[in-house]
Length: 431
Image (cartoon, rainbow, N blue to C red; front, side):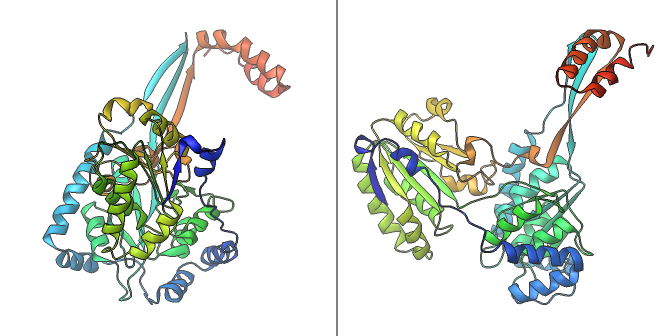
């Protein structure tokens, strides 16, 4: 990891360090659009064709059967089932507390405005599978969807070479009560949920991570003629660790490596007040990654990562707010009082003992988070992501008299005479 020191940095160099790699979909968009258009026209036959082409699997029935789900329960270990149960419980406890409340306000005599929450009826969850089935994604998306009360939850995930779906994913989905599981991945899965096919109904919103083809597909289906909402366009995984002289270098290194193994373009950053910590963390990284299976991937990620040495923890927090990381770790003494200074981050891990990996799996917070500095303006997935606020207003005769003249004046100022007329025609109403 390259090392920078704040004392010797040029003006604007901090902003340069905050730049993320450009995600360019231009080279794959024609292919992605072609697949989506084919699925829109031809439905399940097109989905099966692409599944055979890209996954090497020929499945007549795309939907996972109850027999396959039952078989998955027999295959997974007791230790795994206990881990899923614990993680699911913690995630549900935290997300249940997020259920939004309606509100009602009398803005003026005779005028009542209300805000109520309504569930998104049908949602699609995309869960990457293959060599690394993301069981945690099933929990992080399925639990808030269920708590929100979505009437239909469709889960799409790529099939294994043997034609079925990873038993861990099937067990987790079944544990949450998700019944519609479809063995389809990639662009064809996003297309099927956006357009609707015989096996897969059209959904109102699509959630879930994926490779650049999946991301490009989500980008396309937001637009006409599909007009399907998405959660977010996720980029490479990010972690920024702030460490002072009290930090445990082995723990800091382990957290940085945990996010670096996601991919060669993962963003891992160490911001520290201590030159000694820099050297100790680097030594720990070299020692730990030597025995990790994804060593090559980690090495590439570290090459684009960096370390920044600053003069104070407050200076480190200022840089973190500028960087706006997906994950922010506060490996510093007395971190709790500094929480109010954190403005821009997807999820924050307070204190050295709180590993980022806890949030990835089982502490209870959601791990579907904004990347590419989007944390400056948005947060991660919550129960509200599966709902929408709807506003209501009622106006009685007193309320009409309070507001009518002002509305007519404003409508005329905008040159919208029909708007003004809509108020005037009610003037003699006795209701």
